[in-house]
Image 1 (cartoon, rainbow, N blue to C red):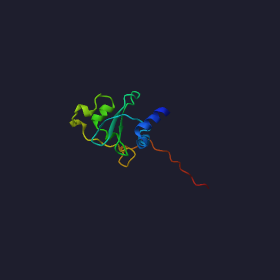
Image 2: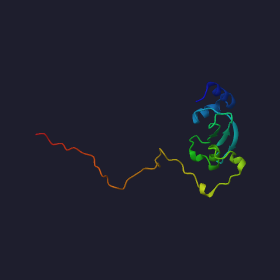
Image 3: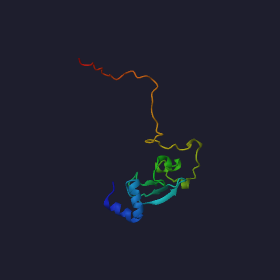
Image 4: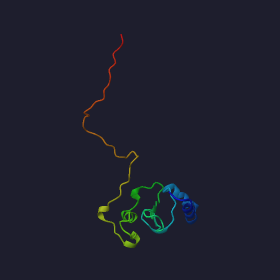
Amino acid sequence: MSTIGRTLKNLMKIGPSQYMRQLDTICDTKWGRLVGTDANGNRYFENLDEVSGRERWVDYASNQPDSVDITPDWHMWLSRIVQEPPTEMNIQPKKWWGEPIPNFSGTPKAFQTYSTTAPKLHAWEPTVKARA
């Protein structure tokens, strides 16, 4: 939640279009130093004047952001696993990082559970006798 003063200050610093985009994507307004950009076009920001845990954030390049859009090196920085951003660290991609798998929840490709065993319980189905 943001105070009115903080919201107005952020509006003045980032401008109306970026203000509306942030409200639409992260439901908050923020301003800070651009730390870097990744291969997907996402922009990463930092503002050390913010409350702890809210000082680093990503501005996704796509309109339908997904967690797989963040590369592992930038994820380490966002999660505070490392203090230096990847632009300053020269991290090489590791073989075990692999290719990201999109989240298919809510789509036709979503995982569906199924059972190959016969049910042990059967629903009771009443039988109705004809009236005489």
